Image 1 (tube, helix red, strand yellow):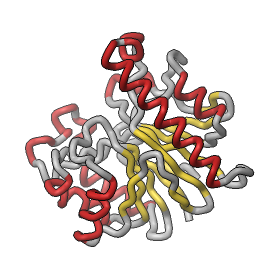
Image 2: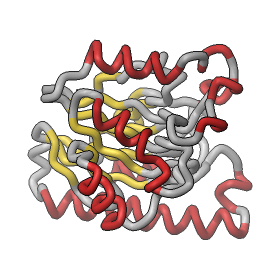
Image 3: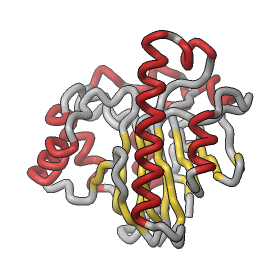
Image 4: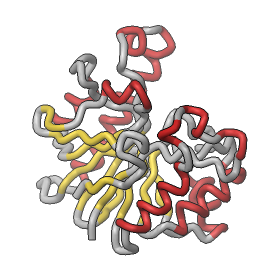
Length: 238
């Protein structure tokens, strides 16, 4: 059993006019690339973390074909929200929809805790930290502070679930909580001080890949799993 990650699937099987192929040749045939690489690596005994930007659908019902595509791929899938997941609604409504359609290997993480392969997983969307304006702008500041609270909740629930830290703690978040310039790292510092062992994120595409930070920060390992960053192949986390 293994844990993999692949963010930013940006599926458009349900919304044909939202293909990512307009963003450059690396995205040509990306849905086929995802399917082929996934099936060549992942087994039904494995778990795949999907850190957001999953479907271009605007309502969960409209994303049925995208969710069916994911469900039919091997493994258990644990998903968090991305900035383009407009279909995301209440956890109950999404879980009810998945159950109704038989998508029983799709799970949602949003400040809750999920157990997988002797690891504990929590997560949230996060927020932009690429510039001072993203952190300190009036409306951005409100969202930033709200996501800080959600990260705090994730850490508290992980600690409650495993007070002795006997199992690895994984945070799944869409926006990068730290960048290559090592600026505005409050989210990353919170995770490190809160005992997060691994943080998996996405969001970065194309020229933004240069902002990706991978490696150790204060004892937490950060992994970028944006689809085009990793060649549309799930990357093994554990």
